[in-house]
Amino acid sequence: MATIGVYGWTLDDWLWALRGADVVLVVDVRQRRGVRGREYAWANAKRLEAALEEAGIGYRHELTLAPTTEIRQVQYEEDRRRGVGKRSREVASPEYVERYRREILDRADVDAFVASLGGDGATALMCVEREPQLCHRSLVAERLAEQYGLDVRHL
Image (cartoon, rainbow, N blue to C red; front, top):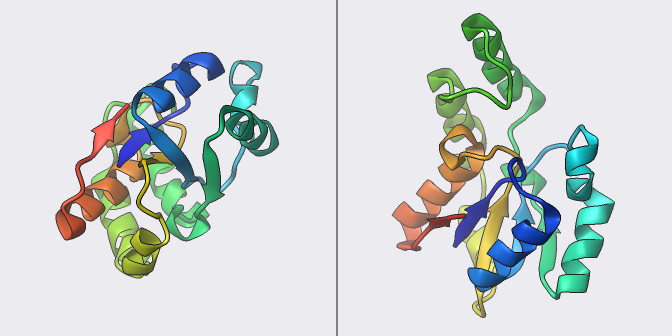
């Protein structure tokens, strides 16, 4: 299992990192599959899916693991309180983490998710934040490591 963000990567470097980690499937855990800004236009759903297909890497959107708008607003409010932008935050809000675990992870059918991954090659959980500890993908990876003994590599 791997995790990867979008910020800080070019498409070529991002694909290279996935190949280097033997990733055969990218699971997109974003609620909205778009990224603002020309620099990251490659990560918008249609372009991303096409690039992954061309690279021979599978793609799946797993909306059930995405934080709701309400949960994301908790983090945005904390960012406003601290006076930081989305791309410059250094810590995830404890309330965001707790609510994501309780409202999303605890309710998700993690067994079915893991069973659907297959066995050949690695899967990468993908979202936008550069640092995994600032993103819900690290919470998913943490849960999978605890429950299934999966090794997790943050790319």
